[in-house]
Image 1: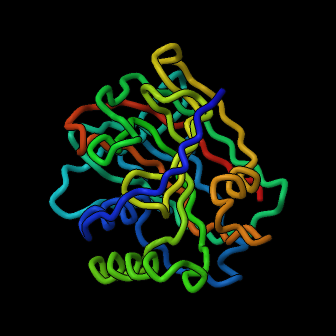
Image 2: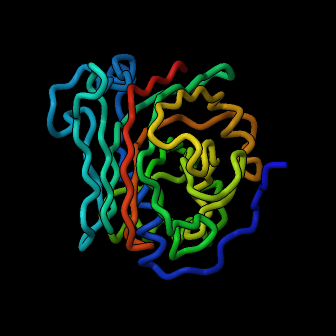
Length: 257
């Protein structure tokens, strides 16, 4: 049976809170409704080779080596290559999307080299070669006071608002497929393991997720009948905690709200 880990993380330092919350996202500025109508997830297949371009943007933390995101050609198409070497960083696409119950998130990913020393259950192992994260605009005033204070602290440290909820799909190296867990550094981040181990390394894997259903399950303790607005999607890879390396690739990401 898939393992479900629901224990809340213990008290962490301000630096850890900032790393976990800021790491998944960076800071998403609201769009007007007119702008929102035009927002799509820009495909990597339509980009020239080289650094990923707008509307994708790179985000990281101070004093961190940078995870590298590059558009490369593979098997006759342009894809995103992600290299993490004792590094950290996110490639973020801001959005402004209200989901319906039938919302579907689809993408392809491929891991050639996992972060072998990663262990998502531990603060010093919170790394991975491939994560796809979705950021939700859950009302901050509905959170417990302790969570609001932590988010306010993180926001003050970086000078901008940070997402209140993040749901991450993970290509892991050891946890069983189907494992769902709260991030070891912040309860504002929930994770679902979709792929694991070495059996499919070097192979493209297609994913299709019922995003609204996953959100309701992952944030069952907070969901109150309406899925919050999606304000960002991010590709993430990091190996700074485990001091390791990883290599992965991403194909186009699509969200049908």
